[in-house]
Image (cartoon, rainbow, N blue to C red; front, top):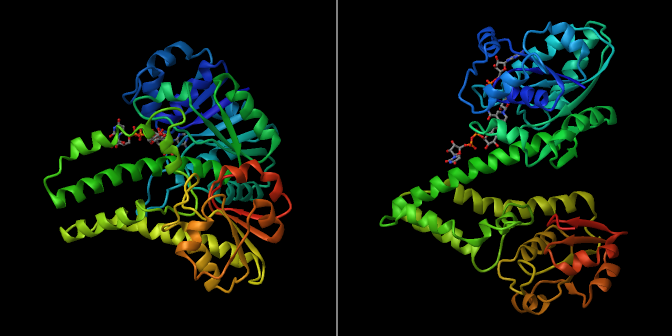
Length: 419
Ligand SMILES: NC(=O)c1ccc[n+]([C@@H]2O[C@H](COP(=O)([O-])OP(=O)(O)OC[C@H]3O[C@@H](n4cnc5c(N)ncnc54)[C@H](O)[C@@H]3O)[C@@H](O)[C@H]2O)c1
Ligand SMILES: O=c1ccn([C@@H]2O[C@H](COP(=O)(O)OP(=O)(O)O[C@H]3O[C@H](CO)[C@@H](O)[C@H](O)[C@H]3O)[C@@H](O)[C@H]2O)c(=O)[nH]1
């Protein structure tokens, strides 16, 4: 298996050295002549531990920095794009370096099957809507024959830990949509002994942004909260956050905090909705309007409407809808501000009047608070499923998972991504 890497920055140099260290013949290229000269002298042009030693160890054995570009590309099974994707003035990712690198690669002529791998961070849909059409367009223009497969393989390494993160990854994500491309990546990553997730292109690209935007959101959330605290006054911010970190849900395997970073149909219950609203109010009273907390409430509303839209789009309003779950979370019969109620009300307001519901424990409570809601109830899961045409899973009760086979012939909307 022969590898070429275009772009020898934090990601590309580490990637090239990583594959070289695993024994694959690897060719590294960078358009920055100064950077290349520096690397040839074994001087790493940025501060990053371990890379110098690995470069010294692999240079001219499995890692090559002075190869002829055409020759190397011609021989390569895998070509990694590790060029920069900076932010444009308008906020879009600038893909110019990706396109330029592809143009260089396509100048070379060979009929060998090769997979072109986007390792640079690119927005979801880039491989399918930008990279592949661009390659096809160039090949058409020059009547060129190339046998190219595609892959997205985002990188999760952190600066300062490039080598450790790359060589000992906690997950490897590969977006591929053909067996031939998959086989090449499978072989390249086999020596890393890490979980490999094969997904489609868009999912692969999305996973990268899912990770980075969670990190950025958590940091901005914490900073917003420091401003909320500052507006109220007499709050020891450092102490407050250190105590927050003692919540046992941060620890353990799996850490319980994971459950809070998972999509569903919104939060409810007696605490999160009212407490979020109240903190916004007191902060506003003190002169600071917290944008993340306010958007947080907005999202908690819009997610329910978004889910109901899906049902409305796909079914006539006389369809019989079965609601699975009425409490705000499993293992509780609390129905206060529970998402199922809002979803049912929205369905009714949009003309869906044929609704029947089941919950293992919360029906009594639900009826108590929502006596005026015109829906039917079933006593057992089986009877609910039998009497409905479309099912909406709104609470992640274990009973639903244990009886998943009951749903096999039904249109099921798993709005908790639970089954
Ligand atoms: N830095 C990180 O921690 C990190 C981690 C994961 C992903 N990423 C992503 O990886 C990509 C690269 O990031 P980086 O930090 O390594 O960037 P970088 O700026 O350090 O390196 C990019 C290199 O690509 C070279 N280059 C540009 N066009 C080229 C071409 N046509 N042929 C050969 N070389 C070319 C540049 O000269 C530069 O040396 C970006 O999309 C980034 O978002 C970065
Ligand atoms: O111990 C830490 C680590 C991070 N930060 C903050 O987090 C930000 C980002 O740091 P870090 O995540 O270490 O930076 P990067 O090296 O840019 O790595 C991020 O961005 C990479 C490029 O996409 C991803 O591959 C990594 O997974 C992702 O962590 C920094 O600005 C700091 O504000 C801290 O405050 N303390």
